[in-house]
Image (cartoon, rainbow, N blue to C red; front, side, top):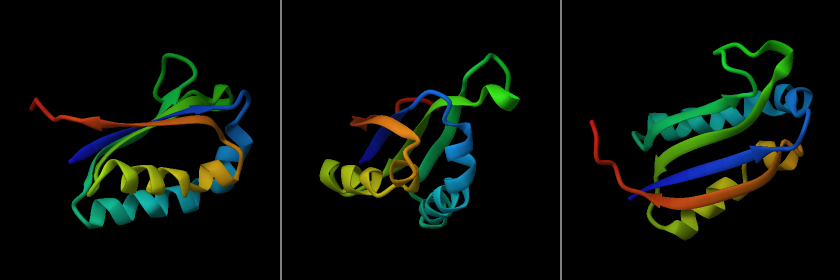
Length: 99
């Protein structure tokens, strides 16, 4: 089943994100290589694809896991958590309807 992992950043998280980004992306690439990643990306703090110094306010990952518990465990091990980027993370089941 798919799960949505919705994360909210601490204020002014850009420097923290930059530091932990390579490790964060490596985990997403592993999900992609396993054919389990549906979509992943950050929420820009302003209405543009490249927010520059404005940074981001959070992230969304939708990926396939065996259970809610395994999705939560994967989310809990995100390098952005260890780096202090995320102030909260919510994991919920997700049903793909379209396309």
